[in-house]
Image (cartoon, rainbow, N blue to C red; front, side, top):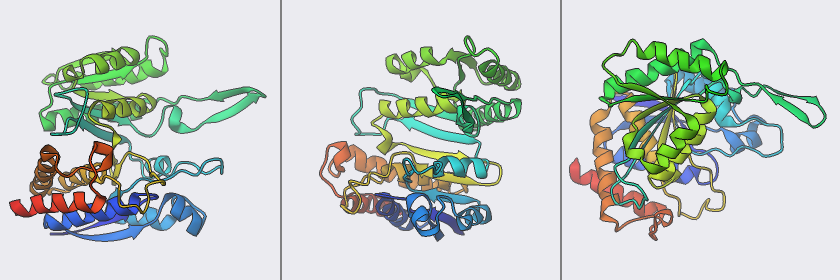
Amino acid sequence: MTHTFTLIEGDGIGPEVSAAVVRILAAAGVEIEWDRQDAGAVALEQTGETIPPALLESIRRHKVALKGPLATPVGTGHTSANVALRKTLDLYANLRPSRNMPGVPSRYHHVDLIIVRENTEDLYSGLEHEVVPGVVESLKIVTERASTRIARFAFEYARREGRRRVTAVHKANIMKLGDGLFLECVRRVAAGYPDIPFDERIVDALCLDLVVKPETLDVLVLPNLYGDIVSDLCAGLVGGLGVVGSANLGEDAAVFEAVHGSAPDLAGRNLANPTALLLAAIMMLRHVGEGARADLIARALDRVMQSGQVRTRDLGGDASTTEFTDAVCREVGKAT
């Protein structure tokens, strides 16, 4: 089967890591026609918009996109292209697994966390105004609809993937109405999944547990701001943002992405690590029913990491992007 997906190569190192992932997918025999579109700083320079209409039309048509890192212009008044994509396409669920990879140095072991982040509201609604000079008010929006659907997503994921527990993360002891509504919605959804153990953690207590005993936690469901912070913390437990992929999922579209920055200082130097975007692509393959090829690539990546012979600089090695990509392609080839 031939798939057609939107490809957003991204800014900075984006084109290099995107090219690496496209090579690996092809080596695994996944037949993909790529509809290449620009976003972020590149699109702003060419079209005056960080999210051009052509890009949105492409994603709506193909339903699936793979996205490299995007740069958000600073001090120009332009909103984040990442946030704009999520809101415009109603990509309400951010799914970010964080697990130890074989051979990747980490302070922790046996970490296998799934972070499910509500992706469309909370303080990220961007509703701010200056009350009087020197006083700014930011509105935290929490709705029953968004809280319920992200909770249902988390429990459906846990059931489908055979996870052992779902934990709701909140600060309802202080924000009794906003976080209280979120927690109430998760509790109601949890009652419909008696087969899945459920508990609750205040967000600061959760952060303590994450750095003391992360192996005791499993699926975390969080409002937008906490989810953003905690997902990066969890990436730090397993080696950093360079070894974690991410998915933004909605009813009608899905965007899979690397969550690290565009690293303009590395752009064009053939030094970037494509692992994060590759992990996102593996999630993408599973999303479209290509589980066998996703597993093949995941095993090949694990073997390269485990051997430790070919590592990019961020992981303590000296391999180039091309050399790392070649190594993964060789491992893929051995299994095909």
